[in-house]
Image (spheres, rainbow, N blue to C red):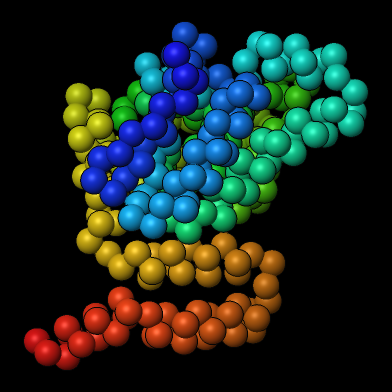
Length: 251
């Protein structure tokens, strides 16, 4: 069986981590498959959104035992290359033109939690549990620190990364990290309904907004305003904007 399944519903591409017997733990093959499929989806202009989910009861439990064994036996240079491979996945998600949504059921831990939070939006059912237990075994959740820090206050990020505790969907919803908690029984249908909102919106506007939002990181206020002005002018030249203005004026 392939470790990553792909399927389409309308204009949404579903990528399903398919190692349920391993709680969808990440290994080199799965990370590589994810990157390949994300790049392929990004080139398909008819797609409006991507959903990453897990087969079985869990989203992703982090690195699998073989990956941990490899880490313990590798040199610094080999571990650096391995860590950069996971970092490439996180950067790829952020750089994709379309929204990427994590649909989380069950556990999303360590690198699995990082994968979920690397997505643009996160939706869950009531069973979802998130956490970074790496510190319990002397490991640093370093690859996800940039993501966590951009999504939480400094103190919340410190607690999340260093205390090793697990957090439920309601708790993360309270700080804006989860944007929908759906019924367990109708989860798949609810996810499709949520993501389907992007079919009703301007694809170019959503894509440009994503690019603007993430490119603001590291800019001064004046620089961010100037970048916003350029994106605003660029948006005005799109077919979607021209058609939208014409429709509004002809009401």
